[in-house]
Length: 358
Image 1: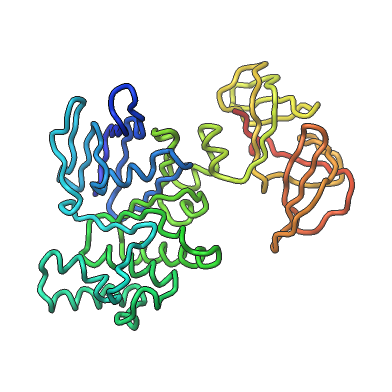
Image 2 (image 1 turned 90 degrees about the horizontal axis):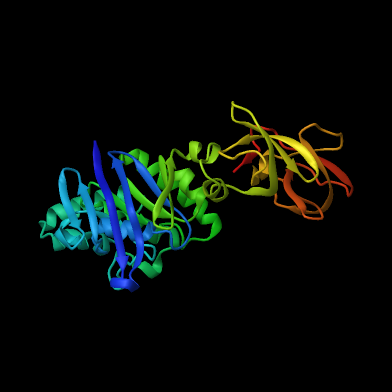
């Protein structure tokens, strides 16, 4: 069952000839117990879509349904229905957490219940329950400035969950944390979502974060959905060059398609050598972009059939591996090695099924 359905949503800033289209007919859904990540570069429309669902932005056309209840319906020429944010009963976690600095943890979490005029005894039970679920039960009397960044994030999540909303909206929930804490918070957030069976729509620009936390990813590009699917399908089977580049750390090589076969294979001219690759909708003789994930390039000293020979330019130590840069003229490739490499020439093998051409 869908707990959220968006259909053909359009949203512009401005009017008339100066209108700037932000959402250009976006349709998506969120099922009960599912986590969907809105992923994309700055300006792609992901935050605007989240804010439109929350009732904080006014679309021009389309529909938004929460469960079986329509909260927005509009057509060109004027809106016919638009429920305000406070009537949509959605949990929202802001990027900045937006905690009241003069209120305790308990009072921050209880604030939404007090606005709904819930009885004091019930408020106490609900707040204590959600604080315990998030490991904050001992911090109820502290103020936000007495908490770590990770604890403040949990308070913001507790405030969004306390009245049991059908959908929780997360706007870059981990962006204010440092790198180490971000990894820990990412694991905590995924565990919490699974344990409580939450339905969540999350905005992020970090593809690793989207893959780790979500069940499904919607990749937005210039106000439209470029591709959607499971994290694994998005990473391993991108439909477009934009998706392939956004979803990983890549090498991109100028190439020319020499030959195609009916099974999706292609023969490419790359760096003076012909290589086998996996084609993605190109004809023979057409200039193309060949792309391979950095982790898929294999480094060796002996000649290989599906690879090119390049000198090692430099290496960078990353802790668990070395990132090596090979370059000669316009041809350059990055690859990972478990050990530091000596200077010299190396053969860089690129398996045909992992070398994509767009």
